[in-house]
Image (cartoon, rainbow, N blue to C red; front, side, top):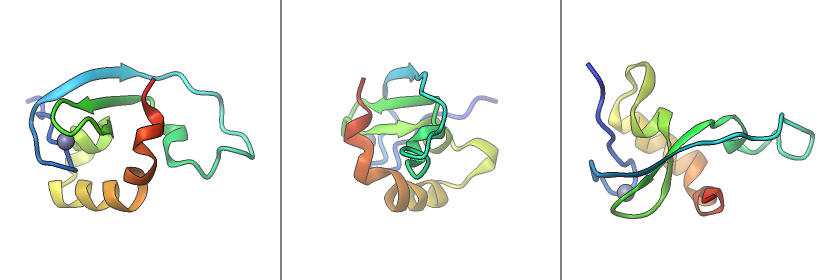
Length: 84
Ligand SMILES: [Zn+2]
């Protein structure tokens, strides 16, 4: 069964644009960037944050609480820079 998108920021289930991202291979400069390994991401239709798919779709049976925690700790600060 496909999991539905749930935004870890605002709880919306309405996914906006889905993006497949091609990024440069990790370098010294960007290896600390948590987004460097994100290849699929979705823009939340409600709050417009860019959400990595592994959090929005909760891969590997991730709980929504865990997705929210990772989102806040790791990705939220820099989400606005990911818009293509
Ligand atoms: Zn949202």
